[in-house]
Length: 122
Image (cartoon, rainbow, N blue to C red; front, side):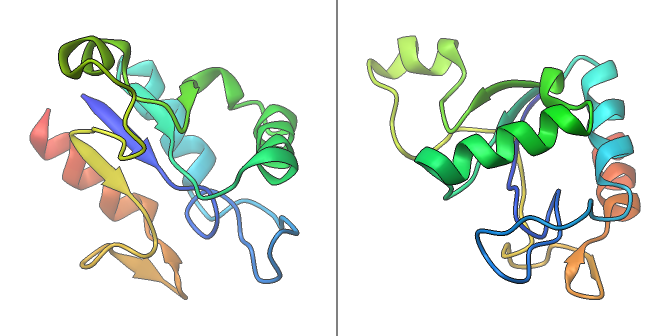
C-alpha cells in the first residue's frame, strides 16, 4: 500500500512549530514495521524548505529516514498515470493527527491503533 504520513504530532511531538520535540510514542517502531512489510511510505507534511530539511535530519537522527521513499511527492506510478506530480498526494492510507477519526492519545496519533487497523487491511 501507499501510506502517506504527516510529521508534526504524528511522528514527532511539535508544540512550538517549527521546533521539533521527541518522537510520538510508537511512531518510530510503527514506521519501521510498515517499511519492513514493504509498504511505500511518503512523508506528507506542510513543512517546506529549511523546516522540511529539519524534519529529514530528525528522521535521519532517529534512524527512520530510509523508510520514506519520498517527501511530499507522489508515487512515480501515480505521477505517470496522471501525467503530473499533483500537490495532493495520492495514497491508500493517510496517517495525520488532523484527520477526522484518527485515533489519538493525549493529542497525538495512537500508533498502536493505526497499526492494528492497517494489519486488518493487509
